[in-house]
Length: 340
Length: 208
Image 1 (cartoon, rainbow over the protein chains, first blue to last red):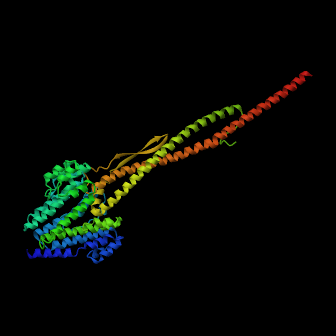
Image 2: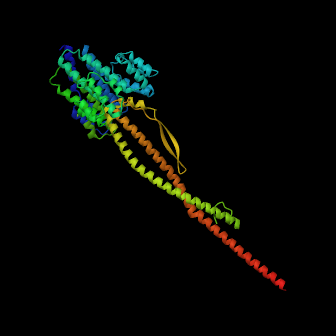
Image 3: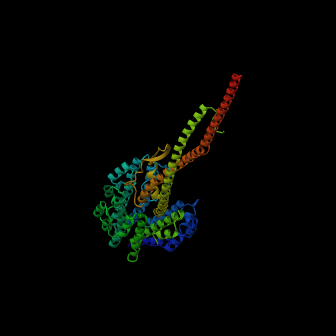
């Protein structure tokens, strides 16, 4: 391990040590109002952003959580170089895609650009203003495709998206591009153990997205042909061939049988409890990552774990903020936390 | 006599005309009472239907909103917002007039449904389908509420007319007819007596 790698791992450990402990998260989840959440977070590094909030709203708090998450990722990016750096940037790309999807969605809905609130990630190759000022969807897509990684989008997907204004196609294409790039980068990592572990967890994420996609035809009469198009390659337990077959299945038992390894998640999706399935999948992922922690101490896996834990904390805090805002019963809110 | 707007002339011609009018009004009263009964039956049926539908729809709406709040919290506002923009301004409905017993009530006809097939991503799609069904049910409930409101207001008007006919107009007109009859009878009797007296006077004069 080089000195730079060591520094990166130490940096990741530092970030992990500053994450909010589970018990504190549960305590925050029991807040009566947003002000309580803000005051409980005053002792953490969220303070610097919360202090700047003029009017305390759920979206303002959520924006400050996002900024802290981006800062943490940025501090890791600045602590490394080469393939490690590329991997973290590519991992962070999910936030850029969220922003782009938001702009595209609002453009389709003909919302004015002043109403769209974007938090830049800091690794983008595109200029959001250029997208916001685009005349129409066609021009927006043209601008997007001139930049990396959007140039990797498939022509057929772009054509169909422009024809149908189907955001699902674009969302899954973004995922496909991101995971392809992540998997390509993983194969360049030096240690086999790290490569296998990263492939496993990234593969699990892909599997979960694919499960949602392939159950669409049976549950919501989605077009099988369209779903086959959006299946993301590189899954951990579920091959593309297997998934392509599931698309045409109509019996629940057959689908559960085909998607072995994720039966509990699939059952929830089939029961139309997709949010619970999503939370279960995230918790499962977290549990699996944590179980590998000790065996793979002080490797790049620690950095990956840090990325995931930071993301989970952000997702949990978002959930708490909106849960408190919309008065979700606190016992349910607490149980829904990924870190629970 | 206070039959509104009617100039009373105690003649046989007027009596005949009055009797004809009473007969027509009684026929109208009979038809209006039938309409009232029919409207009451319809209103009761619609109220029963509304009671059952609204309870079910409200319970479902509450559950859907509750679940959606959970999803909103879990997924975050940004993803929901991106997809929410897709369905803006693509639902079209027309309100058509239909007639029940001569009363114009609205019927909502959906012209353009929200096209959600194949379009929504994981987690959100579940709520989109639920909310689309809920929207259709809410339209049904509001249509039913509107029907009830219009029928109820017409029933109130019909009831008022029927009551006015039953309790005021018909009894007053019958009393008026009776009064005219009595007046005519009295006049006839007076004439008879007067004729009789004149006849007696004439007979007396001839006898002299």
